[in-house]
Length: 296
Image (cartoon, rainbow, N blue to C red; front, side):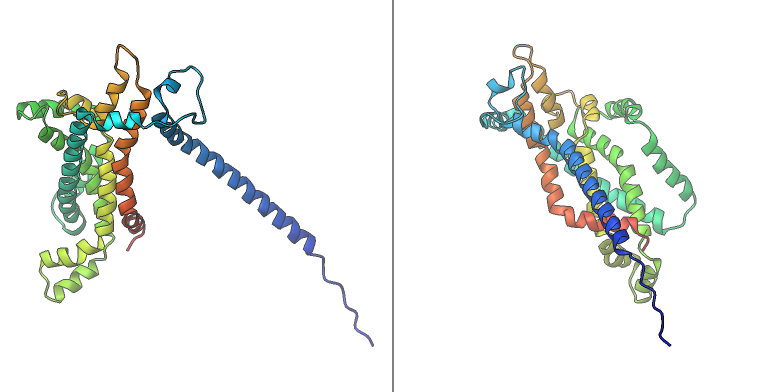
């Protein structure tokens, strides 16, 4: 007696249709990604094009999407402008001081909020969160009055204090998350091994939160470096202004209108410190963002 075998169902056509659908979906997502990249990259391309074109090509009514000639005269004028050098120095002093003090004070405050129990801890956390929710414009005028009473108005020290008040809540809240992700068992093990509280902080908590410190510092630098409204209100003396205020001068000429080439060249030079900082610390930033997103 012979066995009867049934043929296996034909699955190849279904599998082929599934592969075709996946390829079409991948192709569609790739096209969408290219469109988004083009939209995001066009302003950067336009900045480079305008900064490197001669002035005579920038004064026409018809835009040129392809370069006709190259000239670095705008960069030379900006670099050799004493006002730009002074404003760049002011920005570096204010931003660097703001980031350093914000990290030191913010880390100690975040350590207290994440590791110690004390009366009013919940209220302190609410205050830190609440300050971040208040619009900046609502804090500027009281802050300006306070600096005037302390004789610190229109000064780099006063602006640095204002910048620290602006970035410190973000620093405290972010670093608190990084410190809270460090297991308490490591603190207890260090104390059992004979470490003091300071040694536990210095040898255990600080190395584990170093990527978070770098990430928070870079974001704080970007936040302070790009600040315009605060500098525009607190710094009225030309010798004290920052590079963000320097960029405004290219559109205020009553004789020849806006200097678009100089504006784009200055904007590119102003953005270089942030780009360089990001390229240097990008590895630590990625590690810090990952550490802050996952519970340790």
